[in-house]
Length: 115
Image (cartoon, rainbow, N blue to C red; front, top):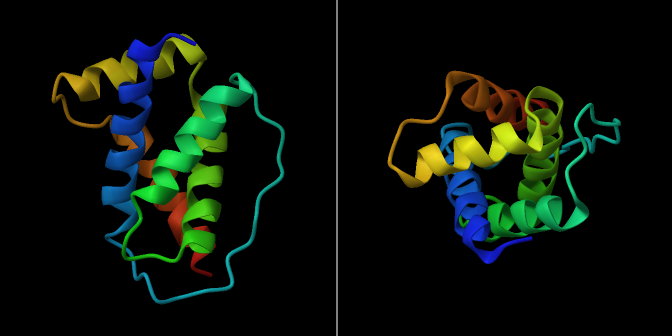
């Protein structure tokens, strides 16, 4: 994986965290997802995304953030190919707004985790 793509993954996870913070951070009992994805990304991409996403979650417990972030990357893989995901990350790096589909994915994951 080229290092120029790493900041883009961080940008996406940071934007997803912003969406997740709009939900109550004090609820627990999150369920982990173990579904297979339609467009599996390389393990390194998934690991970097989840790690940077969890690290950015200052107001939510790391365990809760891991569940939200893992669910989010699964949803992203089901919605976007790796090439599309990279393009979206480049859009975010250029300060374009997050696509509504991405917002919906993370909001859904956060809501599931907070049930």
